[in-house]
Image 1 (cartoon, one colour):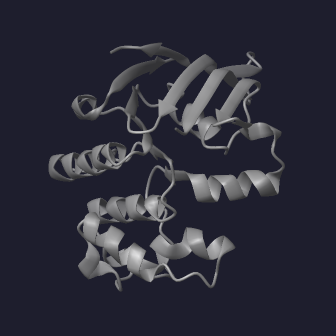
Image 2 (spheres, rainbow, N blue to C red):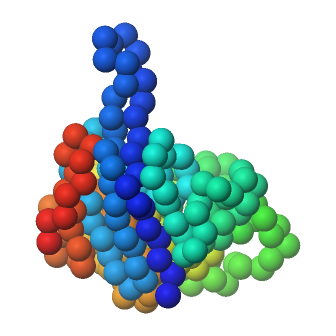
Length: 226
């Protein structure tokens, strides 16, 4: 069973124009993501949640500690190997709207596959995912035609296109109304129930009933809540 483990990881950044040279974004955090479980990390903006997610996702090397994907220590891989593992094994739903406006909704969903396997036919899987997230009728639309909730659902479909064992969602409901917030949370819960290890970082208390475990993050410190 696939696991993603953060072992005592930390990250600091230089703060320009400050007497304090380093700002500690994440302080010695440990977290285990397991197949079939949804872990929520809640906290205010600036608490370190996104930094934690980026380290777990192979996007930001910790200053200290280790991140393991199964038996593989992520940051011992070279850039090419890490990029390929991230592409195939870790689905990431970033903050905001990250669609490429020059591509259709369907092409945006397929894009992660095209990066490494340009000839692979995944149209049917992409259409099935768009059906699952409730926007199949928008497959040929331009992202500019979509609402905020529809763009977020497209991002979920794109993150799932490679059928990754790990799904990391960074504030996926941050700018959505109550109806779309509930819809996105149900989709993440469904992914976990299907066997994916899901991490949700959020400031929304509405996420807690969907989670198997809840952590709080404050000033870079991660603490187990329930």
